[in-house]
Image (cartoon, rainbow, N blue to C red; front, side):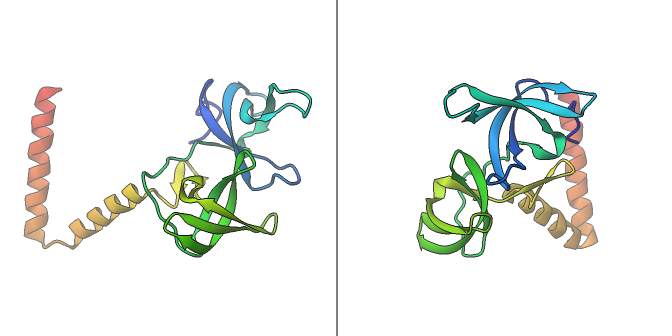
Length: 179
């Protein structure tokens, strides 16, 4: 997952820059078109401009390796010291580490790339995730809970497992009758 056909015109994405001073930062953009021969995608950035004198949004072709969908947001998330996070700073999402919890909604984050430490509100942070083979790593909290439920099901005695499977079969039959 994640080929040229995955990133369709109009899709919002994040682009990671290889430029000095921007490495490790992800910037929001919109897909404009793809170049099948060069395996590149043309994007228009939401927050970056073409030049200091020009206020038009920057447009450029980017390599597929530097492109990913917009990460899903968790509804409410608190952070702890040592959590890897992305912090919204200087028009993009920068990878950092929570080094100190200041209060219930403020955190001090250290950025390895710039060797600086900055304070952020909880709303300016998200868990750092990587887009790997079409999946977010680490998975969303809801996905983790689903995996835990499946693991608990496997721990049930055989008779309880069979009862649950029968219930699921009945549900599928009822749903099948309505489709």
